Length: 113
Length: 114
Image 1 (spheres, each protein chain N blue to C red):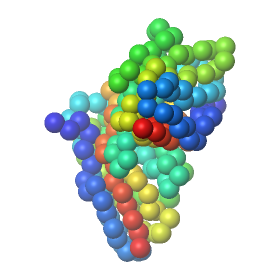
Image 2 (image 1 turned 120 degrees about the vertical axis):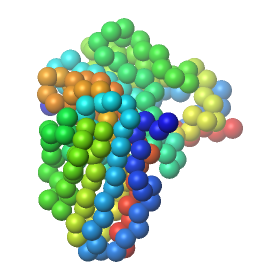
Image 3 (image 1 turned 60 degrees about the vertical axis):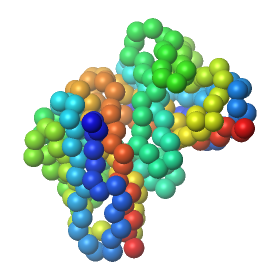
Image 4 (image 1 turned 90 degrees about the vertical axis):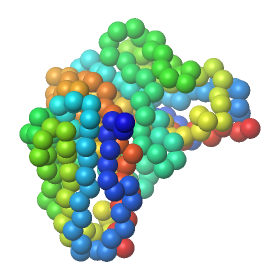
């Protein structure tokens, strides 16, 4: 059983398109995250949700809209994709908001052409 | 403010020799510290974590790390490198009482030479 699963694993799309990445965790965790890993492998948080509520929104363009239909899911929708959006996006979850380790999905490699 | 500095972007060791990956952090509060490993085209896997208990932390695959508050360091070590250890390693800090957020170092790429 995969603890944190993301789909799709690879996504190639043209500039200007709208796309979504789905994330589900079966760990019963309260907190979920989206991280972006750039071409230099640096990871930076984009969003975090706790029990479906937005907690952290780190200066991400409003073309990125997270949606949490329930605490086991945190999807990422991206409008009007740009070349600079190409990266690996990681979903993660943690038991709670306070200093517990995060469990990461396998990542979604997004390529915008 | 929190930050993490991984002092080496690349480390190369021979198989069977010790591994040392260095990490320094800054934190305004009592931090939790983690090491994650990322194998090529794979997700991130937790190696070990420090959360204010024993300062010497043992993780998976023979790795361990020592929290040294006076030096603000959390270096990762392994006595004997294996070929399968070749990967990218990330040092991560998280601190209370703010909302949980993980700050990643820039990563250290470990090469193991046969």
